[in-house]
Amino acid sequence: MKNIFYYIAFILLIAVLGGCSGGSDPDPITPPSGQQQGNPNLGTISGRVVDLEGTPLGGVFVDVQLFDEDMNPMSAVYHPEQAGPVMGDFSFTNLPLNTTIILKAEHADSAVGRLIGYDRVLSFTSGGVEDLGDCVMNSEQLMLGWTAYKVKQYNLALYHFERALNTRYADSLSQSSSAYTGTGWVYAKRGRDRSGLGPPNRGYEWGDAVSNFIVAIANPNDADAYVGMAGAYMTLVANTVLLDPVQYNGKMFIYGFTNPYMPDALDAIERALEANPDYDSAHDQITADDLRACQLYNRYVIGESIQQSEIDELIVSNDLNVGSLQLLTALAEFIEFDSNNPIQ
Image 1 (cartoon, one colour):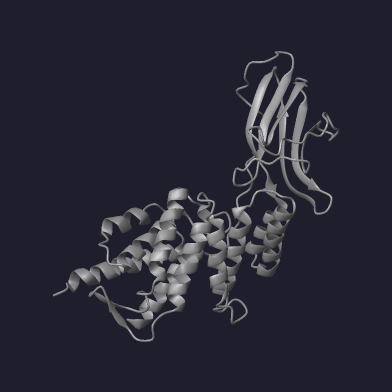
Image 2 (cartoon, rainbow, N blue to C red):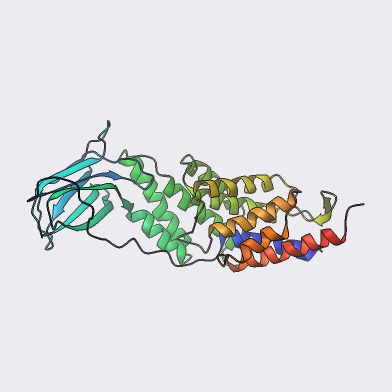
């Protein structure tokens, strides 16, 4: 029994933290549609510049400008307002028809270079007003950080994530949960890899991972931070396994799963699913159904009744990684064991 529970502890970690996978490409750029009423002979473009968390961006370091297809300027540089109800808003009027227009928004600071940007190609076939809505600026440093993370260059990833934090502070931009989330995943993955894929003696990094995730979840919509936090807590469970077996809930011998990290892990999983019920990681092979598999297992360990139908529903979804499939298979065996060995 001892070996199987050690095995399940680490399988659960794999199910949450997963293996590296290719990130998704950005959405393709498409011409605008559904134009509103306006001058039938001229076009108008409006929108709002925001960061990854939806916070409007403005001020002298935020440049919004239009170019033609040869990248010749079609407008002066516009700096959106830095405060107030129109923070981040921009508008360009009297634009020609049947002409390719490239809108570029950048955060440009000569001290640190061009860090974040948004590009979109447009073409008016008839006049009117096109409201682009929120134009989300991506961070070059965050992109470089995740690129390094996916190929396990964790030190390089950490460098870029920390630069993303530093430049935000230096430029008085809003605090971004994304850089803290990336930093947390690096510490979590390095801590995991110390078991065989990386340098030894890095157990302390699990605490660093959780600390960064705690800062990141100040943005309650950052599901990725909650997922990373759940993985970190579950690995702390696995890494603090008791040397002697204990009987948990009067049913089965469980090794180390009575420690306080289990409820924390379950809470993080639940919050991740609340923030994004369709979670699909861009950097690890983890989906919302993988989280639900971990959720079922954690519920079982803390004494809740789990039905076989709940397991079957997840398995037929065909949206589980290998670790989650192994986890659910083991969970089904545990449930069968319970039914054949009722508590007297």
